[in-house]
Amino acid sequence: MRFENKKTFEELISKSGLNLFIGAGFSILSYNKNDEKLMLGVELKKYLVEHFDLEKHSHLSLPKITNFLKRTRKSDLYYILQNKYSVERYSNKYNSIPKLPIKNIFTTNIDNLCEKIYENSNDNFLSDVEVQGFIENPGVNLFKLHGSVTYTYDKEFLFSSSELSGEFLRDPSFWHTVSLKIATYPTLFWGTNLEDSNIIDLLNPKTRKDRPNKPRWIVILPGDQYDLIAEEYTSNGFRIIRATTQELLEYINTFSLINKKNTKHLKSNYKDIFSKNYITAIKKSAFPSRPISTFYQGDEPVWSDILSNKLTNISYYKQALERTINKENTLLIGSPGSGKTTLLMQLAVSNDIRGIKFFYDSIDTEQAKFLLNKIEFEKNIFIFLDNLGDNIDAFKILKSKNNITFIMTDRDLRYESIKHIAKLKKRDIIDISDLSRADMQRICENMGRSLPTQYNERTSLFELCYSVWSGENISIRIKSLIKQLDETSKELLEFYTLMTYVRYTGIFASMDMLLCYYSNNNNVDYVTIYKYQQQIYSLID
Image 1 (cartoon, one colour):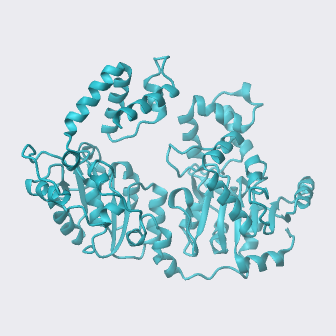
Image 2 (cartoon, one colour):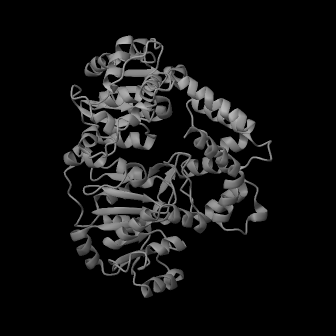
Image 3 (cartoon, rainbow, N blue to C red):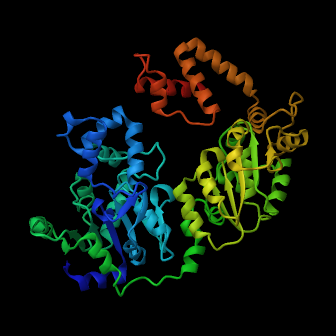
């Protein structure tokens, strides 16, 4: 192995830390659940051509092949990518990575190797900025530039320059941040050839507004056939490391500058690690306040509503609070608009519940494993989980530990389909669909309104608040909207009915789903669907 300016490298990163910019060559010592090595780009293209019988397109590049499959076989393509690039095991030589003073990791890989490495480490922790946001020291920011197998289905895998350009245009501030962070610390480029035009833009002085670059090292494989590549990077200001991934990992493990971190501090620093989910961090955040009238008129609750103490605690609050204090798992069920999320948020910020508290409205399996790793030795954990059905896989992982008390919500209809998975008994369920007369009276007093005589105990929180605050009966408003849609366009009414039904089942309508529904109607494409949506919004407003 040859390492240019090795002493400079060690001296620089010992003082300021470093960035790691990785590509496919970094992951070659990892394996998926089929015990296959993760494929490089050339190997993936060959596999896709054979699997989808695309021999006549074999001359095309991988980005063109994947773009074609996105248009024609997207679900099948994404299933293969998830299967082939989800890491099951990896060489223990990677365990030296978290010991380095890394500030940011940028990756063009879609695999989850980095997450796995840090998940099993007590030396440092990793924050995927797409999921958890930016963090400052301690910790490492992970930027997954091409997507990830850990993301939900609605987030795309990016392969072509045009797709990346689209991302640049949609979120230029994010890419500008990436560029500046690359320029802030010495960067080690490992396993990537930097051929993407958009990745080159990130290194362009104009993107960084002419801020000077910190030194950059790039790993080039040994062998005469790679000498010209090494010379080219040298002429562009890179310092060269000639090594295989295995050799460099072995070398890193001998570094004298390996971080000596306080593991206990890392595990208890929840405010920085889980800034969006840790209740203590949420309570201390300066949330922008909004008029409480927006909640009463039907908007989803936000933390400023809850922390303002302007919302009434309904009678179910006391029942759920007592169960939580006694560390009994509880599921709040009810119809849409019954106040499940509001009650869950009120419980989460209650000072009567003492312990380490986290709130999630969405959590995937990788996040669940990461959380478990950080709270492994804690004894008094409370997790407030909204929409259990949407997060059931993560719940099954979290439930494997007996040091967690769960307070959860879900729709009354959907509970029947998940109760055998959640393994909750009848006594663990609180149905909050119907408000008591006393509840309605307190809510109206809180709004400074009187309770109309027509409301009975079958009224939901949403219906009561909207109608009393706005003076308009929600049922009459919806009937009026349906009549208006019917008079405007039968097609628009059909679309509204479709969207309402799909949402009632507890899922979101994806564009793929809608296009499938309209597949026999040549007059409806994605443009028409967007127009339908905008027309309905304008009528509602």
